[in-house]
Image (cartoon, rainbow, N blue to C red):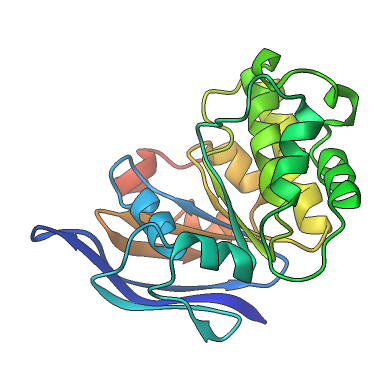
Length: 239
């Protein structure tokens, strides 16, 4: 079942098309990755889905509801949370308190902030660090904290913006384990990522954007051997 559908989405900035007629869908309880060169339009796409930008044209549906021009807080209340690449926690609060703050917001309906906080910390493998100050965390742990805060908003779908950027191989492995645990917990993930090994490891499906247009869409094994993708993005086959 498709939980998110983007139809003919276009965004222009003073005549420059950042996204041009992009269409795709995201299946429930999967990890779908969006990849492409810098400047391809991936962040613009995320900004439109999460309500930070209004499309020039096109349509966004979440659970068959039109959310094309919804503002960010309403998108979040519907069940779409976003984890940003640059984490900005409250540095003087503990890891647990940062996540607890997030648990008071997010998807509409009944909530149990204590249980939600504990659950988010567990999924993101931060339980052992819950009493540490957020300002003392390494980059890898900050990325996991960012994911935990998004999960504490009780999303149906999580938009994860380059969580592996700048991480070493061990940190990346840990982070991909977290993404797999998030999917296992029943949360759909839409991921923007440059680390191809990480994308191959976690993705049920990969969408490739180049110069604002979708050039490939399918399973990772098929997408990364597609000649158009190799020419536009990879430069060589990942095989």
